Length: 295
Ligand code: GDP
Image (tube, rainbow, N blue to C red; front, side, top):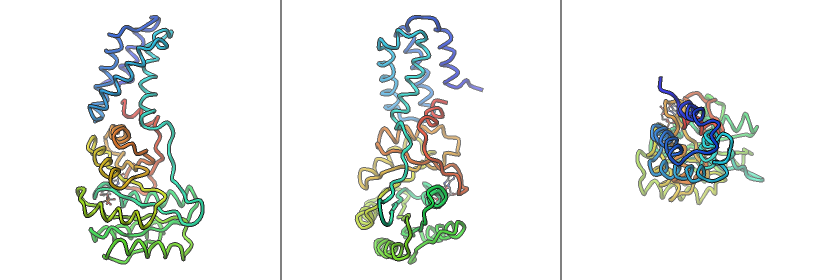
């Protein structure tokens, strides 16, 4: 088996232990390993370049060179810089200070949106002890409504649906229903397409305007790698998202998408979704993701 980046860097650290300082050549050698590792994790090459340049600059700073174990310190800079880019802390859901909390979900078809809604509903009920309801407003794929209803039924979560009609009408009525019935939280499913198109974006804009959501969560498939960041940016530029749910993290991806998404779209990643079972949603931890990406 190939050595992980951490192992390779540790070998380097051992070699340079006791030295008062690293030369620029030493640092370049370490950055070469970091670069290869990030590219293997499918991080966008521009981000990789910028990242290694940043780390090198910091590593060349006096503070580090004068340390007792300069190699070890460079490794720390790599980790810290990754964590910094992905956000130091995990970012939670935004609840309304009073009344109904509205969460709108957006994402491409197949990104795992419907599955993520189920998981999030369960999370909100179990962890935050709130009474949650779903609104089925993905009216482009008839199966999407049935899928959401099946998930809702399995979890005992009510799904408001009116079949196929204008999504704006469904959302408006669904929100009124939730208020009348004293729900704490609604999660709105919206139209997903295979690719981004103008009609879909217009509909999402309208739904957002109408619902005034507290959170707009974008589901992005981690297996898409670098392309995930471009998709996230397009959605964010046009709709404005407050968080990402990175799905399919149970696959063999190293999770380079997390870094690219954060750097290119600037949206914080709030959750990772790790399988088809409903209890596999996790709060996003930048430090854990940093270790996984480094490999
Ligand atoms: P939507 O079209 O965005 O609503 O996506 P779905 O929720 O229908 O998911 C698309 C496919 O991906 C389905 O076969 C899901 O079972 C699967 N899926 C969703 N989330 C995950 C996940 O976290 N891990 C894995 N392995 N599969 C997932």
